[in-house]
Amino acid sequence: MEFNHEPVLLNECIENLKIKADGTYVDGTLGGAGHSLKIVENLSKEGLLIGIDRDSYAIQYAKEKLKDFNNVQYANNNHDNIKEVLEELNIDLVSGILLDLGVSSYQLDEKSRGFSYMKEAALDMRMNQEQELTAKIVLNTYSEEELARIIYEYGEEKFSRQIARNICRYREEKEIGTTIQLVEIIEKSIPGFRKNQGGHPAKRTFQAIRIEVNDEISPLYNTIIQSVDCLEKGGRLCVITFHSLEDRAVKNAYKDLADPCVCSKELPYCVCNKKSIGTIVTKKPILPSEEEMMRNSRSKSAKLRVFERF
Image 1: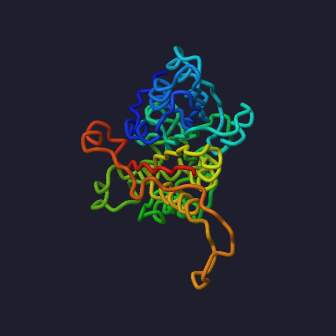
Image 2: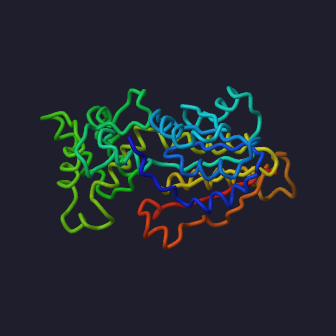
Image 3: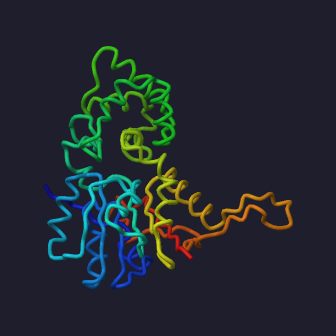
């Protein structure tokens, strides 16, 4: 089982982590271990890399890819539980954390996982194969209103209501069980003149269902807060987002960490006593180069935001 994965914004991430040879670093989204490999190559034997991924296949692959390094520890867990992971390893603070959000290239390419609208497969979309909720359950049990909301909010799909309505009509006659069934429903829901605008017509809906199955958005703000809380003085958090909701959650968390004061602007001075714990390094997100976007289509919507703890 091969992870054909090119890490997005690799050099930019390594540069902004400002890696210390003897530091402790966390790759909270291990995936194909592309970022992890570059991090651990910059560490001495005294340094430590902690790789976290909810996908057990990613852990297995990373262990093989990083087998020449004995200063790597693995956690088959969710990056939302980063504090819990570090506590289990008896680690208080780390020197840097990287989060590369969204679905990995391997998960998209592996037919059986059901992430891709280009290949027929069972509707799964779970990053963690142990969890119960699948795309099939979402599509066959959620109400029309819930489906429309999810497809609109997480997929930014203008035709969310039509798609949700047609999903519900279809399942009245037959259970929706495969990716191709869902693609056909989506294609029938979108007007012909819009089908070729903005990529494949199923792209946005598949993204939305995947986000719902894996609960990718709702915990993210708190994950950023917790991650920064795990950093030592001068430590950095680098987060790569691929979706406007992800990016908004990261921006809002960074802003609240850098400027937490909740006092009225009418007051002459702060009385809430909430102090900044760091600074936003990237006032504007770092974007991939034209060359990277040409080479790796997955990078086109990527944004890197960096925060440094005081």
